[in-house]
Every structure is written in C-alpha cells, then in structure tokens.
Picture 1: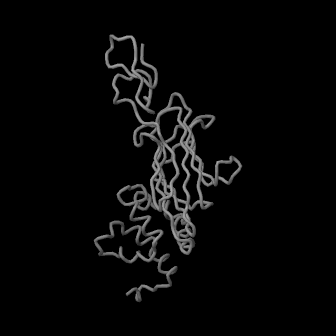
Picture 2: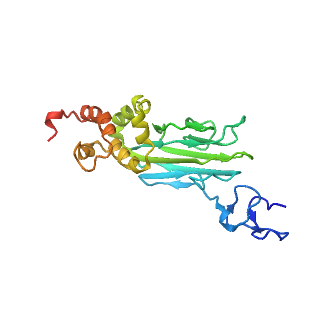
Picture 3: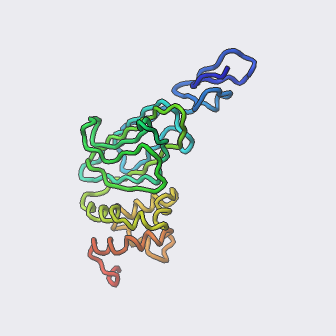
Length: 236
C-alpha cells in the first residue's frame, strides 16, 4: 500500500511509513524518500519597506490542505504597491484554492484583490489600505499548481499620483514587451525602484549601464517628467 500524505517509506518491502519531520508534508500519497517532504510553514507579519511573498514550495507545486495568512503593515506616510507577475491556482467550482487581499481579517472588509484561478498576465496595483491582510487557502484534493510569488514595495504618499498613473495605464499590460518585463524577476527590483523613486529615474537614462529596460523607461519617461515638472532639455 502507498504511504499516506505526510509520510514516506524508501523500502518497498516494509509495511509501515515514516512521518515527515516538523511541519513538512508530501504533495501526494506514495512518497518513497524524505526529500519528498516539503515545508508547509507560511504567513507572518511583514514590516519591511519591500518584500516578497510566495506560496509554500514555490515555484514547485504547493501542498494541499494549507492556509497561509500574511499581514503587511505599511509605515506611516507611505503607500503600498503590489506586483504579481503571474499566478497558478487550479480553478474549481467552489474556488477551494484562492488568494484574497483585503483591509483586515474581517470577511466584510474591502477586498483589494481576489483570485481562484490561474492568470498568465502580470498585474500591479496600490493597496486600498495602509495595512494589508493576505490569505491563501488550499483545499483541493486532486489538483497541483505552482502558486504565486508576490512582490511588494512601499512608497512616499507624495508620489501616489505618479505611481497610480503608471499602474493604472492599460499600456503597461497591453504591450507585450512591457508584460514580459513585469514577469522578469531579474528586472522587477529595478522596475519597482523607478516606480516609487522618481528622483532616481534619470539614473537609468538611455546609454547608462544601469538601464536594462529601455521599453519601460520610455513608457514612464513623460509621466515622471510631467510629475516632477522637468522638461527634457532641462534635466541637467
């Protein structure tokens, strides 16, 4: 007989199973090695200015029957920007696997984001509230998916108008080149840096070795120039 989820047995002739250590479990029944036991611990309180949130075991499939809760507390005088390059969640009739973001733990609080199926296109948005409650639930029994990796960064409130004009511009998601950039983890840090620190924008001018994403630079150039009231001929 196969070992049940959360246990393993390397020798086929044995009639018992070893339990996975600590808070680990297996993705399915029939595990034959301890290396198949994966971590299930997730969630926590996040207070850093930037960070990353992932489903357990990402980018490999997440375990079944888990519940993760994160709280992001935004520092005073700052807003919160979220970027999700893509998300992989199996679609079920009752949305048994889902990711929700809202103001607090109350189900009646305003929802900022909700997903219970896969999306290959990136999405970025500003949180409705200073603090953000994020909950991921997996109850499906016969589907496996890679889950998600979410990037977040805080920004000074005085830049909210600029950040909003960037993330709410349809071209950011309609342009294939810009979509690819939003999904390149090697470039995401630079993208978020440009979005929330307009004073650093001109460090990435064309020809500068730092500028590894000219398409994105061109996309935000006029927005930043207008916001800072800087004309191209007077940058220096």
